[in-house]
Image (cartoon, rainbow, N blue to C red; front, side, top):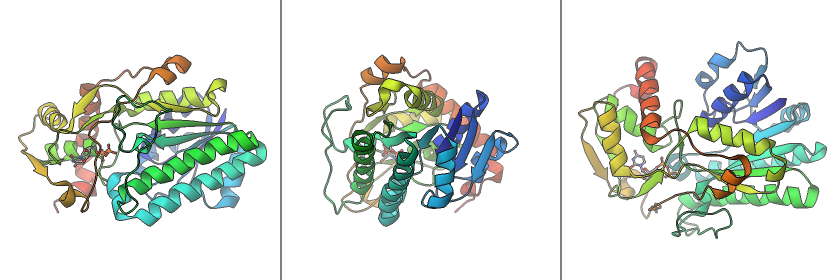
Length: 330
Ligand code: UDP
């Protein structure tokens, strides 16, 4: 099969490319390196089935060519990371909405199948746990920057569903819950790479808020398996699926576990949200997916637990520490 991965040099995209190449697919990626990195795909460059273009999906001429070549488009290109969203809201909104418009418009010309990665962030401040795909989305006020990400991805979802309903473009939506693993950068605020780097360099682990908020972390290899299963299943078309894990951990407990597994002497320090992000920042207390729908369709069940996930990130970060600029003392 020939596939196009937008955002293919990103954290999830590069793992997806690797998995598809391993089973013999021909993989094309397009990535403007805004949050992705060449380092993520370095090891794939020798594979004759791998083709990469360092460009934006909004380069419609190039994206049109690539969409035409491929059987399935995995649309992963997006602005992600709470820190990036709070600091660059214009870029977040524009990248997410424009990029998706271009991909869907081009896919529509030849009715190519599109898997759109969305996010658990779209559930917003919903408090009823676990989150089901047909639950209401509960957004905060528009002057609170965080919600622009949720809204931009919600618009992407509306667009994907509209293209299916109105133009019969086969689209599938995957809402990724906190996905982690090797190659995820801590630069845009994600907690696991941040804690791991802090632990192995002996710096304080910075827990935002009181640390009683919780999350469920999924290993990227489980997430990638789910994306492929959904993209290729005929009955997934026009539907939304949660992709995640139900193993819930508070952020404070996460910090303690990272410190323990890394054998670190670092202190754990709490940082108020307004200091970590911006005045009036709103966080979600809990975020747990209901996995019934995806389980029924493709038999999805995450295989890797929290300790295994953290061990894989610790090993990866230790190995790259010396050559990584992010580790340089600030
Ligand atoms: N967080 C933290 N310390 C950090 C980075 C994040 O305590 O250095 C917290 C963050 O406030 C949130 C949780 O960890 O409650 C998960 O954050 P992340 O940005 O990884 O994902 P989110 O679930 O917010 O999209």
